Length: 331
Image (cartoon, rainbow, N blue to C red; front, side):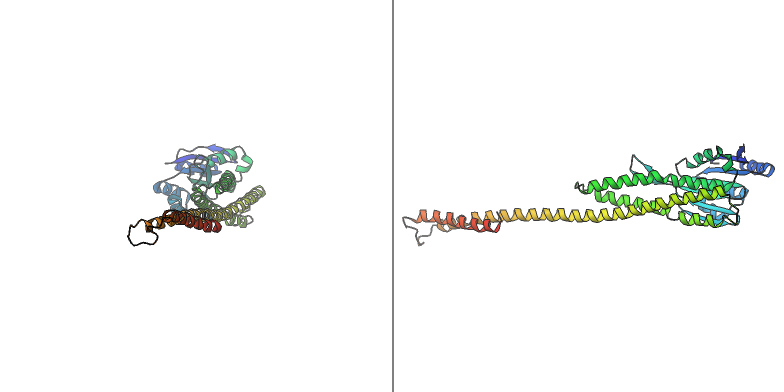
């Protein structure tokens, strides 16, 4: 079985490390305390075995196996099923990688199912084991600590996205043709990030509504409110990213249109110049063509001043057309 860690805690201290689920259940029955089982991408058969030992609801088990769930919190009798979407920013690729963390919490157990490459659950376990005063509060302490860790891990993601947006703003005015694609890809990541964080306030509200009913300790209540503050800040910044990218896309379209207009205007100027010179050169060619047809009966064909007259006529016609086009600004 893909069990990453399996331990039973009594009074906040690691008491036993059972070799299998049956021993975990027996240890709980004899010594009490809380079991915390960490799984990594379990199969349907492995999750079925865990569900049989701890009475997990079939629908929640199915979600934990198939993954691809949005963040949510569902209650099945005395058990909670929580889905979180951890994220991490990959500097090498300048992308955001999303995973899934499913948390089953009951009266005396926690089962974490990790569909992500991050080692956040192990870090939370070590931190809580160093704080028996918190861990002795039971499954709620583990759930709140996991929420806190997932939300804290959003900070590097926000910083990475913010840096990418700053780079896009520099690209916009440099004429980089790839900026449109990068804006689109970054906007898609921001949307995925928003989908991961926007359901969190509702999850926290559901947990807060159970404070009195389940007699949650004061320390844990303060911890959850601190998580709530962090969530609000992350959501506010992520929403601002969406607006910035939309503005960047609009600006990119405007700049692209301006560059195209400038290129078109420049092209028109070149066409005008070429047309003007073609017309100027056409005038003497026309006169030369008339007098070069060699007909016997042509005016001024045998006139002594015919040749100078033709030259003057060609130069005058060209000069006249040059003056007209120059005045119009075509050349």
